[in-house]
Image 1 (cartoon, helix red, strand yellow):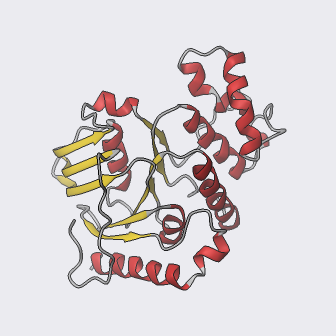
Image 2: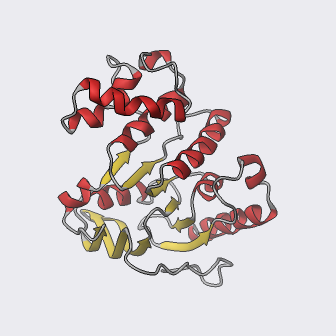
Length: 268
């Protein structure tokens, strides 16, 4: 992994055994525009890895490449040992920035849409989704329409829909970017709890270094286009720690500053 010369960052964690996601020598270009340059990354099963970097550096492109929605220009990607793009897609659930809830469906029907797409009846899909509404703080809103819900509740339903797809890998593309600061902080804490209860292998794209460090086990700092890995940092606190306590811990603050330093140096 390329790092900034003399950057004060931690050594990458070594992963023993097979990786849930393995990327080697990955490069991608849009015609003459080079988006990603030779990226290597291994992610363990149930590990949560964050990608941070400047706008337009290729973070969302990387998620699409992992999911098999784009074909890479160079290098290889394997998800649960599957390198074929269609098979990678079968192992990945993608959550974009917008919740994309269908306005004519109720909350529970939106959440259980993935089950319906897999052939479940409406009644069976609702039965499977219903217990998770209470666990995710949505009890009593099963029959609400999207316009009747707050932004945070809509994102919870979108995440629940992603989870019910039953895929081992979740690709989250700035899921809280459209929320206000207070709701965003609440949703970060909620997502940390949700992932503890429903573990998945997760790749999270974020512009917010603090968000990534709070939610993830490791954070990869990417440079501006073409994206290269500038630094890799281990999160200093467990995800289950309440957010106010976690983000003010001296070790957390120091790690955040190292990540910001790497981003500043990489943009010069």
